[in-house]
Image 1 (cartoon, rainbow, N blue to C red):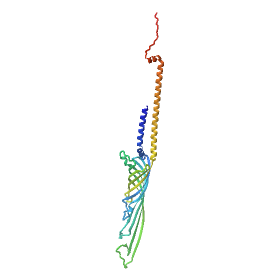
Image 2: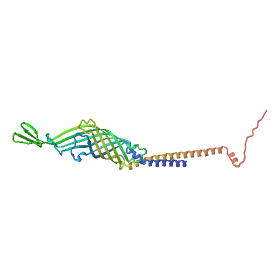
Image 3: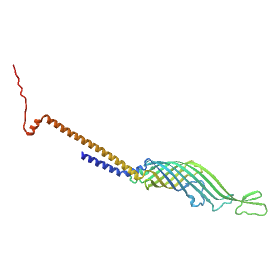
Image 4: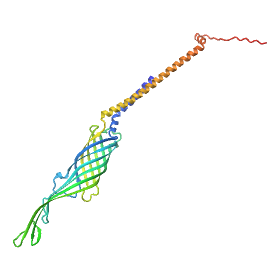
Length: 332
């Protein structure tokens, strides 16, 4: 029994040690199984195929700041779903170096700006989970898509001037090569005009993103994200695409590594202690049964000796012994 108990304990210790070796891997999986995370993001954005063309615009007008955040739920290490909000804008500028004075009014400057808010529901698939037997679970690449809604408001601002002359009731642009004489009455009119036009539109869009993330700690993750959105039903007012280059900081709502591993070890130790207790109880029961069997054997031997005391003595002395009774029968 003692050897069997020692062998069983050795096997249990080996199993426990193997479990400890896999504790870290299991913990990394637990970080992305039925857990929540929140994140903030910021970077730059630009738009394509905007109806308002740029003319000699400043270089800074091609890019715009972008900022937002979101929340994700990890279903399994290979898939997560979430919601996201982001704010940004796009701008265009027109600065004319030459003016066409043949027609009036003449536009000399234009500025177009659209601010937009967008929200989406998305799903992300972890491409790194396709690698068989991967160990670097701190590094992940998510391919994402979903559906979103964009709300935009824009302003178009421009400055123009107009110079005209009215002679004999006829009004014409006043440009180069125009002469004025004293033979008729001429009225010259000049003005500068600025306009500020507003517009707004709301559109659905389809996003596609690639998100590269690295776990700095179990609770904090840094990432780089690229995204392109395709706007639906543009109607010559919305851009074709919105493109983003973003940096992300994510907070994973999970227990700390020490707490999780401590809980794991406590569970393993409790299970091991329970197994040892079960084995100890079984060993005690086996010893008690063996003691009862030994007692029963001694009792049976004692009863046998009590029933045949002389036979037992003669057997010990090596002498055979026979005993009998004389019976007399009388016949008449």
